[in-house]
Image 1 (tube, rainbow, N blue to C red):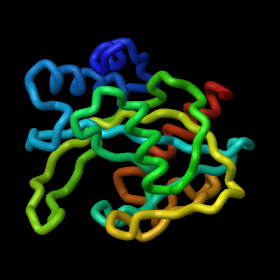
Image 2: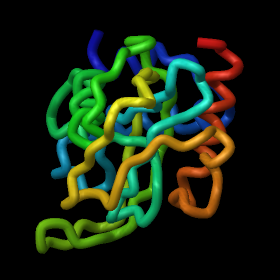
Image 3: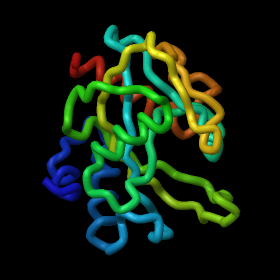
Length: 186
């Protein structure tokens, strides 16, 4: 199934996801270059909500550009297999080997990205059309991170997922991911 079909078939968890799904589909229908960073209005990203076996902790990465902690993920950069991108980003950003708990999309959201400098060039403000997959990893394994993209990686308790060290825009997303995990009892 192609990425547009996956998004079309996705059943939103709440009102935010319902509205963002409409936005995702309009973005796909109105632009040819939705899978690359060449589109100045938005980029697709694939991310991971990584939990421990006991479902009490999650992995967060301290992103330099976003200025705080959030779940790992990155641009799809032309790839149509969003799940493969999410797994690759997890390996790059955390060093973890993960178990995929569900190959279907776990969550979606449009995430605002502020204008910033990357590799010496200005990137204007845009949206990330973020697709998140649910994964599990051993919270006893060592973590590693890329120093050019982040300031660290760590496991946090779910209670910490909305504290002041998280990116401002990510707090409600973390809260939603945890709520959805608890509702679905995966």
